[in-house]
Image 1 (cartoon, rainbow, N blue to C red):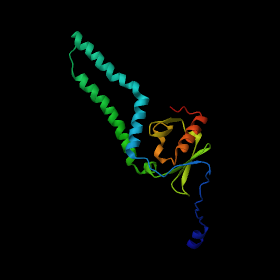
Image 2: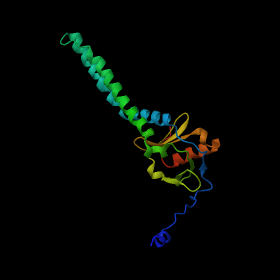
Image 3: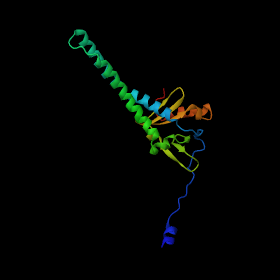
Image 4: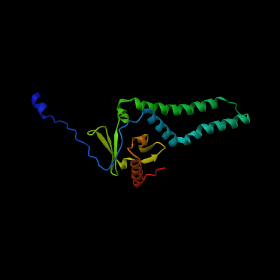
Length: 185
């Protein structure tokens, strides 16, 4: 019975992922954990900057109350600043925790990307990888050192300029992003 069971099991065969020969092909690289934390912290500040007015308003109200002599309290300054810093530290710990968890290990694996107008292929090797369709990309931006393709809140593809084989690949990606309707700054 065990023999028949073993013979009836299917074998998994890995097949090469189909790629476009005209696609932009990058060098293999891995996202650094500190870069991941930094980009997410900047995105947090960009998305939630208006919450910075809460501590400023508390400090301003306390200044007025202190100057009018209604209530003298100097602890509000300290507590407001500590609260704002604690909020930022909380998020920094959350993003650092993601880098330590086993289920997110694949975020920091070395990938080679093949990018064309249809899709983005993320390849671990010639047989393993994944496909990202352009409709999954919500926003694209260009910094001094990289292209960042946002797929959702705190999810992104980071493509530093150093992974491209030449300047024409960077220009082609810039053109693809503009053709797809992404505003590149």
